[in-house]
Length: 487
Ligand code: TXE
Image (cartoon, rainbow, N blue to C red; front, side, top):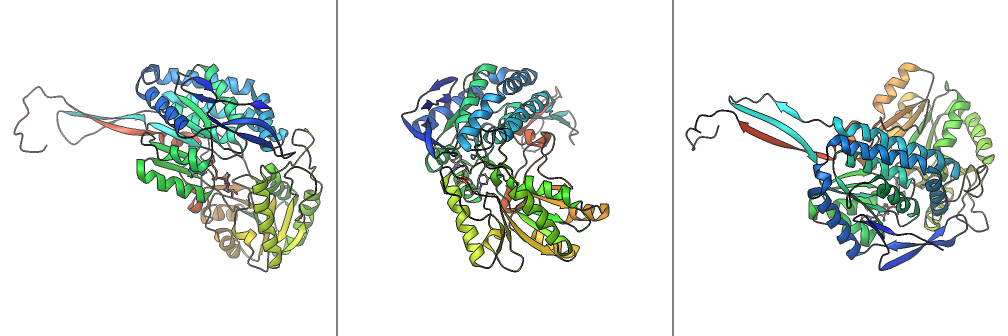
C-alpha cells in the first residue's frame, strides 16, 4: 500500500497513529495515512506560530512572498497530472474533472501571487494638528484551514493563496476522507521554497485533530469548508481562542428555469449542476424550480441526459460520473431518497443502489411538486435532483428563497429585465444567469444564511486575512502640554 506523511515545520514525517484510506471505486484500502492527534497538532501550530514571528517569513517583502506563490503556481501546473490521479484515486472524483480543476487551481495561486504586493495600508486625514496617523495591514496570524473531501486542492487553494499573500502562516487540515492529494501537495510547498513552518499540512479526524486545531490558543483565524453541523462546533470552539472564522458550508441551491429559456442549454447546465462530481459539490443545483408549462418537456430532456451519463471507473477518461466518496455518504443519500419516495415523491429516474463494489449511486431525479419532501429541504451532497414547479415569477422567487441555505442559484430565461429582478430578489451569495457552476479566482464565492459567512476568491478574501494596525506619530517638537487632558 502507498504511504503518506505529514508536513510539519518543513519536514515530512510519519505520525504515531495512522489509518487506511479506501478507494471509493472498489471499497478496498489502498493507502496508509498519518493521523494527527494532540502531539502533531501542537507541533504544527507551534511551527506556524514561530514562522509567523521569527525567521525569514516576517522579514520578507510582499513582492518576495508573491514570487514564492508564483513558483507554487507553476509547480501546481507542472504536477497537476499526478495530483489529479491521487484525488481521483482517493475520493472517486472522475479524472476528467480532477485534471481540469487542478490545472485551474494553479490560476488561484497565480492570482494571489500578483495580489501579495497590492495589499496596501492607508493614511488617515486625522482631525488633530501635528499628528500623522496611518494604518498598516498586517497578517491576521496563524490560520487553521480545514477542508472536506470534495475538491480538497481547490478548497485549500482558496484559503492558502490569500492567507500567504497577506503574510499569514497556516496549518492545513486535509479531510480524513481522501487526504492523499493535499498531503502530496505539501511536496510542492516544500519545493517552492517557503520557509519551514509557513505551511504545515496534516490530516486526522474531526473530533480530535479538527477540534484541537480550531480551539488552539495560537490560532487566530479558522477558514472552514464543510457541513453546517461541523461549522457549529468550529464556532463554539472559537469561543475559547476568540479566533475569527470564515465558513463555506453547504447549500440547497435553486435552479430556476422559465418557459422562455433555451431548454437544451438549461438542461446541460442542470446536468453539470447536479451530476458533476456525483453531486458532491457545495454549489450543486439540487432544487430544480421549473415553470409548469415546460416542466414535462424539460424533465423529459433531463431524463434522457441523466440516463445517458457514462458511469464507471473514475480513472477512465470516458467516465462521466464516478462513485461517491464514502459508504457513509451513500447511506445518507439512500435514506433521504427513501423518505422522500415514501412521502409521495415520484422517481423520474434512478433511485436504486446498484449491486457490485464501490460506492456508486445513479443519477436520480425526484419530482416533489405535490409534497413536502426531505430531499427538497436537506442537502444530500449526491446526484439527486428534486423538482418543484411554479406558475409565475412571484412563486419562483418564493420557492427559490424557501430554504435556510443561500449559497448559489441559477436563473434560466431570455428575459433580461426579469433576470435582473431575480438577481436582486434571490437571497444567495452567487447568482448565475444562463450559466451554472462557473468560478474564477477573481470572483468572490460564499453564501448567505446557513451557507456560511465570509467570501473566498477575489481581493476581499485576501483582506480578510489581515488586520489593521493604527500608528500615531506626533510631529511636533514642542513638549506635550497638560498631561491630564486627553487630546
Ligand atoms: O463534513 P464535515 P462531512 C455537507 C454535506 C455532507 C455533510 C457532512 O451535506 O453530507 O456536510 O460531510 C473536519 N472540529 N458538506 O461529514 O464533517 C473534518 O475532519 C473541526 C458540504 O464530510 O463538515 C473535515 O476535514 N473540524 C460541504 C472537515 O471538517 C472538524 C463539503 C469537513 O467535514 C470537526 C462537505 C470538528 N469538530 C460536506 N469535525 C461543502 N460546502 O462543500 C469534522 N471536522
